[in-house]
Length: 317
Ligand code: HEC
Image 1 (tube, rainbow, N blue to C red):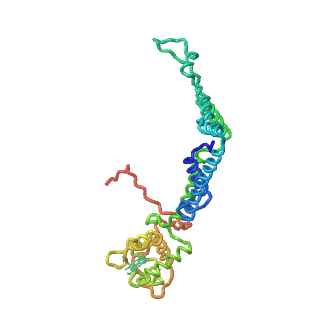
Image 2 (tube, rainbow, N blue to C red):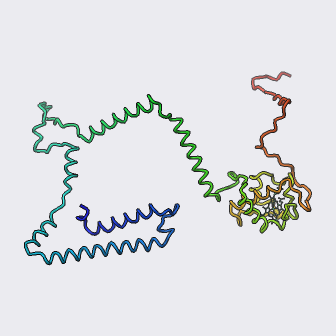
Image 3 (tube, protein in one colour):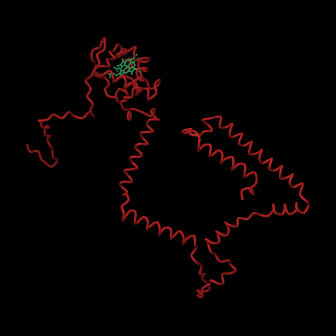
């Protein structure tokens, strides 16, 4: 059947088949292989030329073979070639699935009733419909046994599983899309590579004002628990990104540093906490307490009882 297809179908189909296989087998990440590896473009060009060459050769062979045939053989050949290739199988299938009566044969299935001249045909249910109906019954049976008798899994379990999968996917995504951090999503980075990157950024950009050990100079001491603009990764990230108070000298770094770089240097800055620099600048600002930190639970002491005020109590003076 395939050899009967004309060349303008054969060549593109084969070409895209090869292309599809190539994309399938070459692992090129999110980018298509044809863009990631320019060599594959040359390869596909060669494939195209090869396909055209094969077509030309086949055509040439056919012409030569045709020339050496006797005149009546030539005629037979042409007749064979021009025979319209009908898709018999498809037609038979269609007839089988619809089982419609030809209009000339409708007399066989007409019903006796006559409603004011309106007659009715007794057509069979189309087999394609009936088969689909049987399929739904089968589906229903399998479903019933699976989910109501053997209790394979519940919707809640399916939901939990999908959420877990999605969480893993989000983690994977975050790894590749680190640059997406902003002040709301930033988290303290602890990877050595991130901290080293942070150190490099700090050394190039920040040491002039904050000193290499964070002891402070033009800028405040970064080693103590006191913060002018708030401690913790989110505040520090925000300070680096948006800058300090006007006229103090701490510029907004978001113009020159990428979000991930600001997260790295912020994490590095927080490493100074509790260290003792050579020339510490006096603490500025307030001691910062993380509002999200788990409250220390002291045993033996009862939590202060909160006074509950009830809107229904009336204060009498
Ligand atoms: C030109 C000097 C200068 C440079 C360079 C500089 N800073 Fe600052 N930095 C300051 C000053 C001044 C402040 C205090 C801002 C204020 O009081 O509002 C400050 C404040 C800070 C704070 C907040 C401290 C607090 O107590 O709240 C952080 C964090 C900080 N800088 C980190 C950095 C980082 C990281 C870099 C490098 C990317 C950097 N700074 C570069 C001068 C500088």
